[in-house]
Image 1 (tube, rainbow, N blue to C red):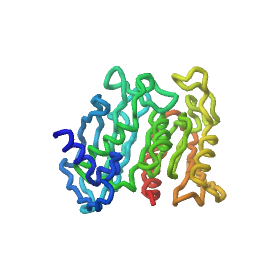
Image 2 (cartoon, rainbow, N blue to C red):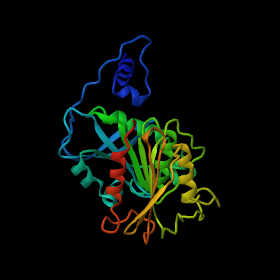
Image 3 (cartoon, helix red, strand yellow):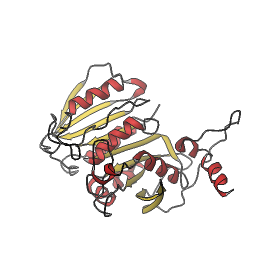
Image 4 (tube, rainbow, N blue to C red):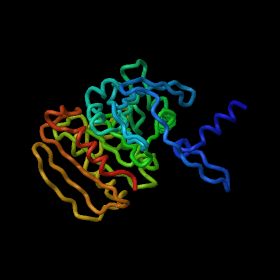
Length: 306
């Protein structure tokens, strides 16, 4: 009986769309109430169970959120053998969230200790790959958990990350286009195949031209994939331009260290943008050099789901 009650609760809006439940034939839709946040503004760690395993994520709630409205959400994925605390410090997304009024989640990957974690992004990486961790299930369970304390705007869910976190952002864009409106990989490329999203997904790709680990033109070696080289950034962008059906001529401009190429007339109001950063290596750049986090949020804010 308890199990049945849980299943029924899980399938109530707004959780139904996120948990993959369907209503009974002929049933009338039920309005989704706005759920007031039950956590105080600030940072917390939350624990959820996914496929019988405890997983954790860090949650940031800004001090002032719009009332009576669903809230935008940004997933920020850490790099190889890192964790959520590290990427929170590296990216500074909390500051932007406080100013703009959105939730930030910093999930923790899988590893042999809590501070050296990895993501299963396709051909890489580490423990997560070897254990065939289902990152999609983790993401969906985070969304279910969040909707017990607030109402996430299903049209404004986004993913970013760098290195292994960028690989995962690309994979989620391929496999979870029903959830993510836009992704923002930083110094990382697509290493998941086949990439066949059911819906168009906006992409802003940021890459340091001095990245020696994942070269702009491709090459190097993907960890865990033998001698398989990384694809070039332009090859990945061309794939997504095709996925999003961008038919307009790309427009290029320069702003300090950044050369920006924007692809136009994409399906469903989506957008593709490639930003190359001169003099930047394999890292999430300091905001004093390139305001990457601000650029990512501005792109996300301009590209919700239709």
